[in-house]
Image 1 (tube, rainbow, N blue to C red):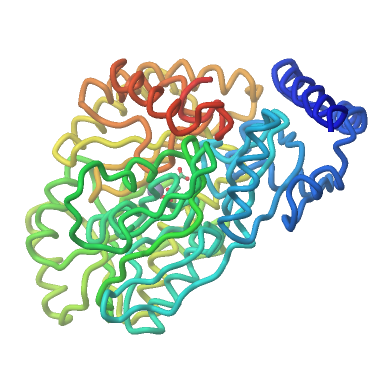
Image 2: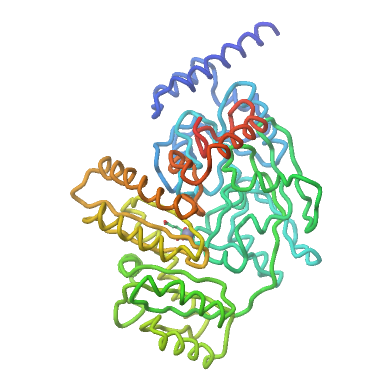
Length: 496
Ligand code: 2HG
Ligand code: ZN
């Protein structure tokens, strides 16, 4: 017993030391030597984590140690696949005991590096936790485990004649737990709200290994601090989300899509106000002409309108009579807000029009753009665009910049492409320098440096532009309560 306890202390100290001193890109050889020296092979994990599937396979380490941001090279120690909350508790308890850092992992579709494991962490994948309960018609809810894919929830809701309000291009891969951890937004926030607004119950394991059942699916519950909302958007730094009860909505039926051409970004907000007054809006998106160019080249589509426009708005609303849609178009055309447009003639046509917006991100993914995901109040959007336009002209004169996003939520995605002649490291440095100007402008407008992609690793150095020193200090104190050993996704959101 004593020998065994001693060995544990040695492993513990050695591991802690290794996690502290290992260079950022722990190399494979070093990792293997370390595991061997400390007898931490697969059987070590299996013995300490009974029933949990463990992988030390190089492909799995590469695959599960990264996310769509690819901001760091993956170098986790192992990937763990629990199947229920008790196994997650077991993992957290073991990680605390041996001083191992954990990276909770969903569909890894994040764009801020929140799911990257680059420093010998254990990846805790939720992908084998995919159970769904039947839809509850009385409550209009569905309870799911965290690894259920977003599109599966959408399908289950539709099969029950209901609707899940969250949607975005990554819905086919992203998982509910990850959506909750990042408070994902997407394309229909203006009608249905953020992921936060869909969560009626939450189950999670804290960094101390405690299992929490929060809010129990209730609509009304006035019993003090709502810990559910503390965990939503906490990016795996406080707890691992293991299950949730999701709110479902009445099915909206058929939708109509209008794709409109604009000559100036000054027309965006007046057009939004007019559309919101005239139509039952569910989305109001915008994108610049170069976005269309990239999507057409990538997806083999013809341009949406005969004449290219400077800007496009794609709006979606509950189906209306053709003459009502035409009337709305004439009204905004006469007001000089739009110069051209197309109205969907069928559900299939509506889906085709959506492609010009939904496929922008994938169409430029291989070019590894520098991404900003910023938000201000809708009323401040014209001022923000004006100021950003000036910054871009001054600091990015030779760069291609793509603008798109969710005007109906005041959320703009600014993607900067690297000029071919520029080295990747120089490009990153320059973009990070420009960030200071962009975020100063966001701060002055009371906006957010990360609207819906999270802070993760990528935006962490700029958090103070959106959150005060007092807020950041309170966040740290909250973290130390729920994660006293600092094992939960260290270095993400808050600096470690
Ligand atoms: C979108 O709205 C996503 O398409 C991705 O949030 C944004 O690629 C991006 O910057
Ligand atoms: Zn978006």
